Length: 227
View 1 (tube, rainbow, N blue to C red):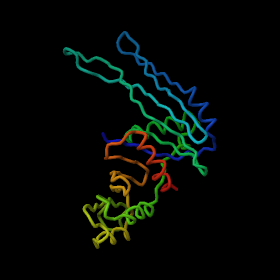
View 2: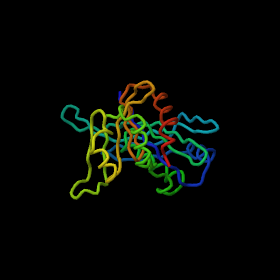
View 3: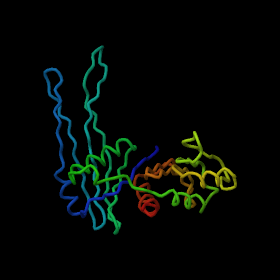
View 4: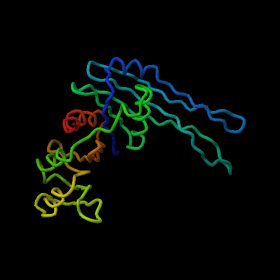
C-alpha cells in the first residue's frame, strides 16, 4: 500500500498547548437537505495525543456521495480520515497530514482558518531544490527519477531523467544549471526503501511500510531538508 503525506509550515505565532486546546473543541456540522430528510456532515478531530514536542490526532470529514440502488440515486455519507500531527522542532512548528495531497491541502486550509482565523497561517513547507540535489548527489546510484521545472529552455516547462547513473548523464548537469529539481524518486541507503519527494514537501512511500515507520522517516529525514 502506497503511503502519502504532506508537510506544512505553521506561520502563526502559537504553541502546542494553544493548538491542542483548539483542536479539542473543533467540530463543524453542515446540514444538507435532501428531499424530506436532512443529512448532517460532520468534521471533527478525535484520538488526540500529545507529548512535549508534538500533538497528533485524526481529523474526520464527512462527504456526501451518491450511489445507484435499484435504479435510484441514493445519498450516502462517506467519512474520510487523515492523521494529523503538529510537531515543534524548535525553530518552527510543522504539520504533517497523512493523506493524498489534495485532501491534505484541504485539511491544512481548514485547520489554518479554524485554529488561527486566517487561511495563510498554515502554508506549504518548502524544500529548496538545492537540498533535493544534495540528497541525490549523496547517493546518485539510488535515484530512479528526477523531474525538473522552471527551466530556462524556451517552450519547455518540465523535463524528467530516469535510470541509473543519472549524475553521469550530461543532461543532468545542463538541467541543474538551467532549472530546479521538483520531484525525485530514490532508494534509501538504509533498508533500501523507495520514496518520492517534491519541493513542496509531498512525501510518498512506495515501499510497504507501517504508518509509524513512514512518520519516523519524515521526522528524521524530511524535516531536516525543510527551511
